[in-house]
Image 1 (cartoon, rainbow, N blue to C red):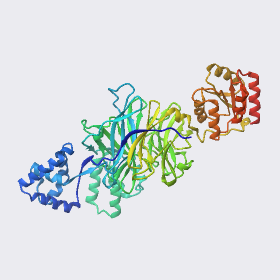
Image 2: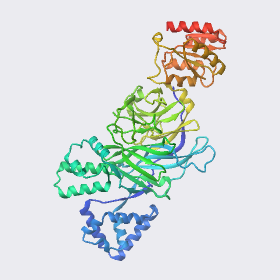
Image 3: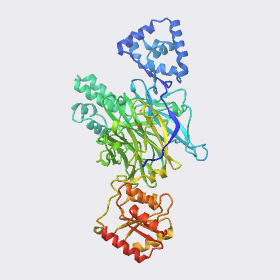
Image 4: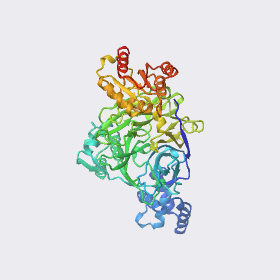
Length: 624
């Protein structure tokens, strides 16, 4: 059953004008020394003229370009010494000029701007009634297909229209702080995951470190070992792995004068040298009511992938660390927005094919067994499944947007509903995609793909930011009421129950919008030993059917949202084999015939005679 999708007019395309200044060392150290020597051969006047021209050409493209040149000069001081010059004796202008030759511009968004996730902005002050301020993160890809993480800020108004602030002209990388405190036990555990725990070199380098150690402490140990030991090729690889893991922890801070669109998290650690992929941001509420923002993402160095976790409270200061444990593997991990029964919960895709769920007491350590949550069931997801961001909490369950891959590697978005108290249970699902690429969206770097990393609810609509063919991004909205209405009972909850006599208490779902009728019928049926579940209309009935096993449905016909006829028609279309008895004030034979022809097993007129109702139900339970 297709669902109505409202595509928003807002789109984000790659923008080659968005550039950052990166360190640049062409051809290695020996070539770098030659470059320094050539710069030093310039006379003072020529050097100053060259510097001034460079500043004129680039100072309006970067915030404080001279600071960048100085930083990059400091990176190559050893080359200056190697070329026969004393860095301390160089003029300020000469240092800046050298730094400029070891700098290049990198267009962070030139190739693709995709895989967005959306969260509420920490700052919700000074808004009009009904407005909400949001932050959307994107995966931006530039030269060499290196991916970074960028942001845009906007507002959703009371009509769910989206408006984004113009992007800032300048783009800034953050200041990196890498003096992280490590727990030796956790560090060893990750080395075990990397199959390095038995190697003697690990003990020799880390044996003298305390239970808690700093990044610089480990650096000293590594340098001491290299200087005092003849390192074999195998040992060199182990040292690289230890350093690789240590570099994966860092903190970054942006200046308070940078707009959200001017902040870029560019790959910093060796673990992510080839890109930061698909950050799934979630607004996380702690047990004490405080709020943090977390994002899981995949770090890629061209060979291996490493799941990592970002933590921030304000989107200015970010803490980045690896996700440890035997189940911290593959792409697509997504954190629930709060603890479930006192524990962190995470979605994952252990085998690259199915959706799993797992739990932990530590947010970045996932050791306990995982539970299979969802397997491909419909043709549009036969190749593989995955999540499209963190689950969204609703009063009727956890709404999880999924993605499925079908014929011709077409990616579509789907949805399932998980039980609020026990999200290991799928209580509802869509048999068809809720969003797939249209003719305008299917052309791009990877054709026929729509993909999202996180949606939100706003004014009773699901707002989905989504990537189009791994090239650009758009937005869509879906009515939450329509989504609930068309959600089928989950595969493991909507079961046929024909052996009713073997059960202790038959469970009846009473569907009626009249509170008086609800009370009267509930009292009658409970005295007869039935367990009663009440729903005020057909829409709520579908939710209850997804949450628990129902043996029989007693339903009024004329109700808001979803009538009794529509409820029965929907159940039949989904092959949900639960007997339905209509209770109605409609007295015409045409109405009775219609209900029975649709598949109702009985048709009783209101006001219902209690003794007749009891006899009819006993007869149904004995013969069904």
